[in-house]
Length: 307
Length: 309
Image (cartoon, rainbow over all chains, first blue to last red; front, side):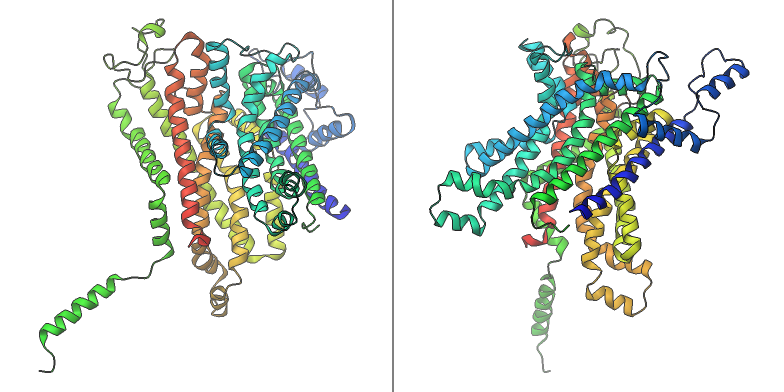
């Protein structure tokens, strides 16, 4: 087990380092420096400022300093556009928002998706099954950036039940639409995966044995069939999490939640490279860590996997 | 005469008929199964229709995609609605530009991004995966570790970074989409290559001294084409989704060029003014096309799955 974790770490750490190097080199090669403005500064002043921020050093030195700052102090450096705040400030402001509804969406997607899948499998070829399968096909072509406008159109413009944007400290009515928009398509995928693996498990020998022994159906499904049929779902959790992180960018922008995605797009539009870098690396780190956890979880649950 | 000419003729006719009974190849079987899949067939026809629409559309449009209809500007809600009489079949957008022409152009760009992404995946991913799987050993593990590392990147963020740094253009979109699309393909192809490379026909080729290069391209890859084709058709909608996602954020193609994502974004931004057609037309094209791609992908997978014979 420890060997396995070490081997996964041996991939995770270079990945993160490579990500930092790629983003840094991209930013470095971008035309125009952070102090290029419409009125050019005198060369001496520019040189002094660049020396102050360490921009006159060779590229590799800058990268090492940057990585060192992140590792030791979790410091992503100053923002290029706003003199009075650092990338850390931006992250601290936007990240809790994204985390709140992202986490909620994740729970909703998994809980509802698994329930729907199990019910569809038990009641195979009934109306509920067809409904579940139908919605999961439909939800595939309704990604979050299509869901969001449709939801706002229905619940804000036509019915007037819910606000179409804003955050207000995470009040429940501001949370509902973002969570639905973000979770729907993953919920559908999870439901489909659960259904097919549940069907497979329900047709296997040990379930037949359990039935022959006269164990009540409810106990068979919860006690015997559920755990093995959730294995493919667990391996799907990694991609789901990643997709939700990227999807949250759309939700942030469309619902103006003030989350980290909105900061990312704003910094992209105003070419605030350091904020973009910080957010990219943070999201990359999160993604890699989460995939690591899922891998370990999977190895721990599935006795058949070879470590 | 030993033989009656009549008999000979009959025999030759019979023989000719016997020629008609051919062995069923894998592809012929697959084609038949695909034809029996009604959803996939209907999707194919609809998709062909959409492709034709995107090519013929510019000749049908009464307006170009950049032209501003000044008579509509400022009164888009009243005068910009879809109508036959003023030539705006799909209405106009908020700036008075003809939505029909813009949808046609958006369709072209979105489909192009999808196809180019899938094409890069087929070319690069297949070669990469086949080489890694065929040589095996250390080459394989190094090549696949590289893929592992790249696949773990938050590619959407890196892609946006790429677009911001090097400027937003259709070409950069192709590059970015191409960078990510081949990764999964190379994994799938490698797995298939591992099962094929120990088969007798590869061994025979090796024994006869055929070069590695030729074995990979003449003997291994042709046997993978089924898997590659299935995965490629499933990649096209994913690439379209990726591009639409970025364009929806306003970071994709630059005006006046447009794509489905950008059009949906514009429509969504203006829907509270009551100009719903700006959202519904691009949305309809987007959803219908994606549906078609998914059904075709499913149909192809069922058709080419050897387990189903």
